[in-house]
Length: 418
Image (cartoon, rainbow, N blue to C red; front, side):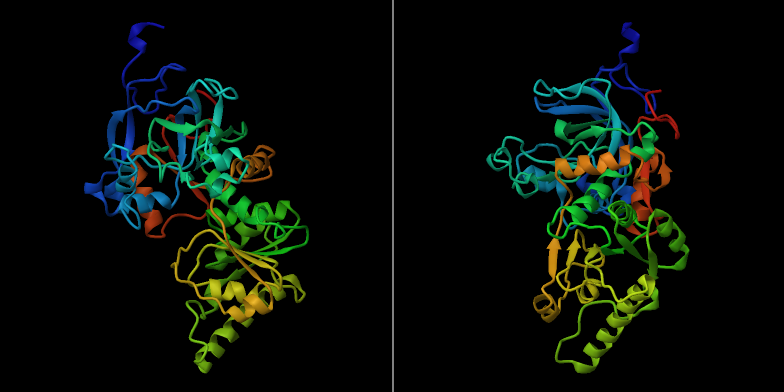
């Protein structure tokens, strides 16, 4: 290697020699002074390339996935992630987001034995202290106080030429996928996998009816495919009929247009008889739509929730006796009402769920490796439009499925090291 090939900074799309770590890198950076609309919160900067610890890896990012958490990061609400990390002792006054990535391992820490420089990988976003007593004792690391979401609660995420990760976050990149498709699926897919398989006895079984809210979105598109692969009958709830074919091709047994109903929102007070009767009539009509698709009076054993405030009352209502409503977000609001009579008398379960542990993330990735899951990549953005694609997501104008951003990949369509 001649000295003129070893630079301190490489332009986007030009990979350094394998294993060479330049001192500086290009990144899309959020600073507190720019909190606000995502299109202006993200700005390109040149920053120092992060160093790694003994249990970590440095990955050259080929492409990054787009998730709503960095809309929050850019706006500075509901959490100022920079201030939160500084309170914990970190010194950086900036945030490099990104919680999905595909790329190439460029360096590994001294304790990392199962990955080497040159490996092509995808990254899951679960981080925790691998030496914490509860983790060493075999407890689910998702319940550890040390758990964090990489690229949101941690710095140096995937919106940069290099990202710093814990080595256990790495999984094998599916060779049949492009870099951009491989970057798009892990956060939503592993989240959906834990929701549908991680809460026994309410793991999806063959023949189960699974109601999937937002079936054409990133989470929903993964949930439909996982449920179908497990032999269940997923039913997708979407916003218009134009999304029906998309969901059915993924494996949905049928679809419901939520705009045909108007009972959404928080429950009226139980003593307001007329208003409560109106909600009940709407929820019953929605439940009948499920039965009409199935051709029998069979209610969902599992309801896959994430809208939250507007839909939880209906989800609990239509869930089968002894079934589970599992929720990972609150995109319509965090204050969700439950008619406790249906919860206790019908012995239903309302379960919170958050991302996934290693085993669940790896199991989901195995489905992708086997070609059983389509990442549902809908649109790819250049690096300089990182803020703009988050703006689209903030305004709910983004396309169905999942989005990705090219970082180190010089163009779309590449599947391996150029």
